[in-house]
Length: 282
Length: 171
Image (cartoon, rainbow over all chains, first blue to last red; front, side, top):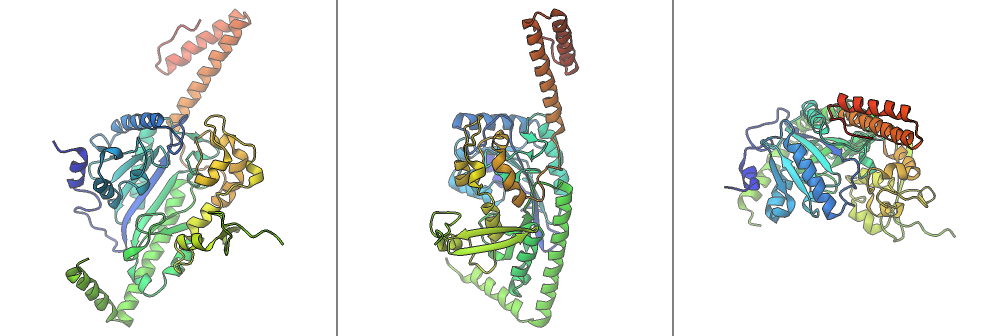
């Protein structure tokens, strides 16, 4: 019988199979919630025994949660490097999780649109992925999942600070909502710097393809909310949605202008990329 | 002459100074050349600048942090400067003098207005009520106030029954 990881890697997934984005600029939407169990040290400070206990406790609850009942459960220490890397490339787990110590695991649903990391920076990092621009849907899914999970797990929560997280930058909602955007025209016309600055001023942050510290290869950028305390989740989602919509408009305008003003530039770029793909050896 | 500023990320002398105004608040970061390059500050796309500014606001004021310690997990503010993370959920209450000033520059507000874990809070209210009743019962017994004790015992039985738990022998 194949191991769970092999089944998972060959199963059809939300991001890679039979799905296309209706909006050609937003490739994928993602929301994650950071949650911790009350009366336990955060993963970075817990010893091996406590981390293992937390892993077991969270797994038991996740197995009983509607929508996750037939999911894949993987333990990082049981995977080889290549398998771990594949999970990172599919945005199912983070680099931090695959480098973690004992007790790091993930529970991933059948179509890989939901992934819950256990013992990453926080005890639980629940994330929902959706192809295309579907922030509201992603929020509804993760909200329901989180409520179901909370009926069996005691979350660390304070009425003043909200959900208590290892890093104070995640306090409050513990929510990071983001969209992966393909912005080649804004990069070519040299407007990306302006966009980054404007987005920063609106309390959003621009990162590379794999989040914090990664570069923006292929003109793919991740744009997300920066602050988590002091605003309700739907308010944050709504603001992000309107910021993203306006970036989509700018990108589409820039594409039109490029085609109008320098019609030779794009076929040249595409031809060069194709040439490298076809004839490159390294 | 004043001593040269130190880099926020290591102990070298800072030569790159950034100032950004976010939500009418001034954020300052001082870096050495190596860290500035490593963090992409010199990159014209200004990529990780906001990450960095956010991290800089994690540096606690030394005066606010001195002498604090989380009794629950033994966490001390010095460790926070190294990792940017706390030890356990109880740290937030124990080190509140250090947390509060940080939050102002980090977030839109300082109070949570979002989702609340209803089930967990209900459970907590129930547990707190039970704990209070049990402690009242013990005090009453110790003081030989048996009428009060009987009242508390009945209340415990009732609270447990409401939650679908078996009544236990408490006396």
